[in-house]
Image (cartoon, rainbow, N blue to C red; front, side):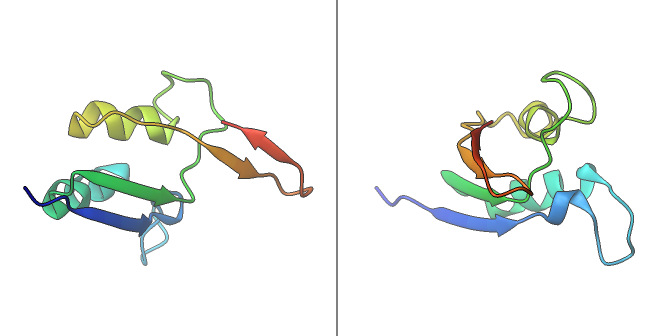
Length: 81
């Protein structure tokens, strides 16, 4: 069995047109059809379950299970998300 891993910087779900549309990112993730996806710049500062919490939204849209990890905040401190 092959294991497919992909890494994708979603830039906070903001496209080249400047609009934040997580639906586009969800479509790309489904097209990748990877077993494991690592995502960067996923905005998750909103409460979990909020429509603006991108990790939750993408999980619901794709059926994937998010595993959030450590991130650096703007002031340089590491924090769990």
